[in-house]
Length: 197
Length: 243
Image (cartoon, rainbow over all chains, first blue to last red; front, top):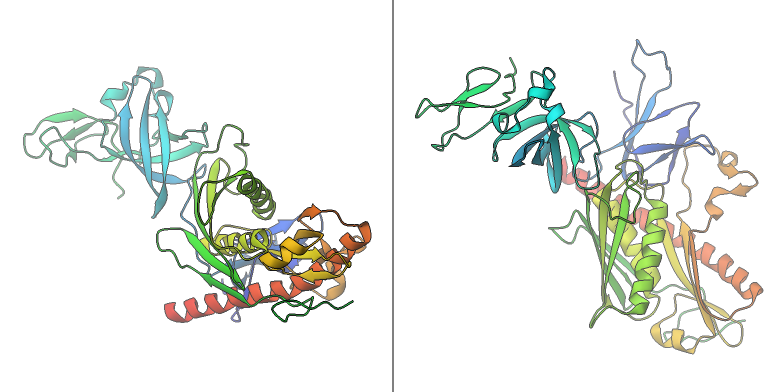
């Protein structure tokens, strides 16, 4: 999928094409009142041809090479978060990364009891799933309320990826519900994320 | 109807413009904008989590904090904050990151007239620098009406005090397009003829107001060109550094 070679510098509000001819990609938006695609960021205008198997034959116009703002958690994105507080029905966590990028600002997430695992959700004990300080991989379910995003660990690959034992050592996963301290050999309960093979 | 101005400018002449971006390291975007002796510094932080209780959580919210050169914030500054907030909300695409807040902090460095337009231009440049998605750029201009009915652009502080009335106008940037000219009509009105904000002070006739609009629109085209060139110059220099 080759991009066009010449790149034109654009600023916000510049017309990039008609919605009948092009689709709006990153750094562009479509105004429905006049069926026009405009730039929303400063950068270089690129046109990406449609995928060969795509039913929509319009190329995608996007603005690249701009200074991006910090990543923002969105529904469907996978985040890395640090657990700050564990309660009976939920756990709070500070989001540190959205996908591969670290966040600039502090975003708070909540993992509710029903979102910890996919099976036997009524039997989940939050204190046996997470501890404060644990690093978890989670999926953003929704924007939640004004205070926090709702996060879920209800998949095999989601859950605790790193945790410290009482002795202060980084624990090793033993099963999907247990982690072991390499110093003392003590086993602690966690909702463990399956390691990527 | 010509008028003599203390600094020797013609009625339609703007003071020298200077714009610098990315001047603060801790902010996500920043810009300083100077028109003659009037200078404003703007910094953008965000998008940050959450919106205020009064705001719609389904849209991103803009928070404006005005910092005067000296002393406490007063009624005038509160009004400036509100005008700036509404203007910036109209140019930002607020549906992309709902339930987030972007803070814009405006610091007055020196006030020698046309302060609000200067602040709007600085804030807009800072938003561009922060990479916040915008529908279009905004360019602001101040027009004033003398007792004799003459209209002058970009007045200084001394000129403002002697004027019968003055008006702060904000226009969208003039449209640059890859499409043929005829296709830029929205109905019968060209899209570049929109007006976003209009704040008047003092009493003026309808004719004076319309003349101010005409002059302001002509000046906004020059400002648009300056902003675009400034942004493009910065972007190309950054791209060459990266390359």
